[in-house]
Length: 140
Image 1 (cartoon, rainbow, N blue to C red):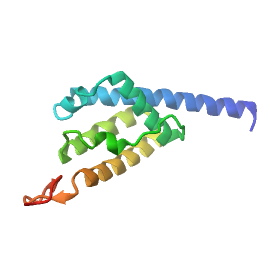
Image 2 (image 1 turned 60 degrees about the vertical axis):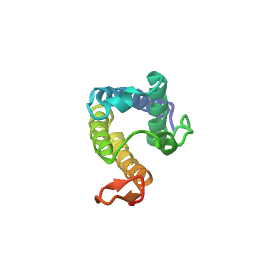
Image 3 (image 1 turned 60 degrees about the horizontal axis):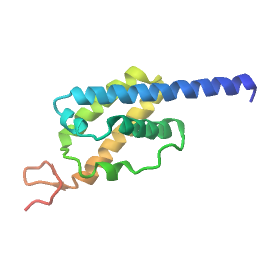
Image 4 (image 1 turned 135 degrees about the horizontal axis):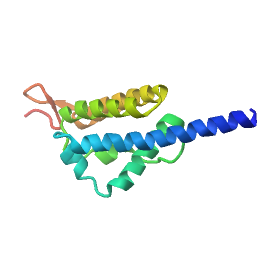
């Protein structure tokens, strides 16, 4: 690989890292302003530190970096969320990535977020209530 190829790859990587940080901020700004998600997003302690963790997660997911070492499901398991929160979360997230990331990374992020949403919902709401809706608890 030539020096110019390496420097172009480094520049692309740096640009995508910056786009990820911008995207994460954009998404959380949308979430904070949203009537459904705002109360949940607004309860995040030390938001700027949290945004750095989220940017590290997406850097690992999209670029293969090793900055994120956590387990996202465990962090979200006790949040006061219902199934309808996931649809809105995915809608705002999709808007943010398509506005801020290059198209290849945006579509990768949407696919990953869609998969995560499905997995989180399956883990958080493993039962179907008597009303036919997803539930955290088995029907009585």
